[in-house]
Amino acid sequence: MLASIANRWEKIGRNFLWSNDETSSGFHWVNWREVFCSKQGGWQLGMRPLWHVNEALKTKWLWCFIKEGNALWRNVIIAKYGVGILVWWTMKIPFAHRIGCWKSILSGLERFKSWVHLEVKNGSRVRFWHDVWCEDQPLKIQFLDLFRM
Image (cartoon, rainbow, N blue to C red; front, side):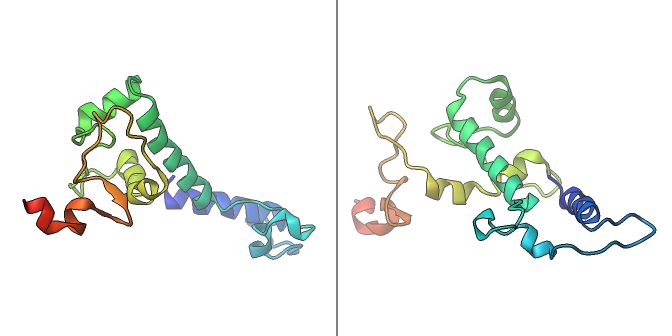
């Protein structure tokens, strides 16, 4: 979601809660920050900021990219951007002029990778030295001398 769209939606929400239209301002029944508080505190509305929802939806697209192996939309993305060695992710989009939906989704890839753990199974999709096994670095960085041998 574009930031301008999210801002416009939040403005509409504020205007609704505060009985506000384009010509007059209404009474502020609740502080805008409290609208996003948890409902556990009592009377708060417990709404989520739109950028949180947007980040969650982008993360879901990354998950679907992994799980929906032969889906048409995935094949279109792969045809446009290419894939890495193990076909888990598309290649990074290096060009500034390619600002689009998939580039926005890929912006959360590193955070997403930190939440996902892969199961080895038969090992055909595992890169022993290049994948992160422990801590936050691949083995080729942690054991450089051994990797060189």
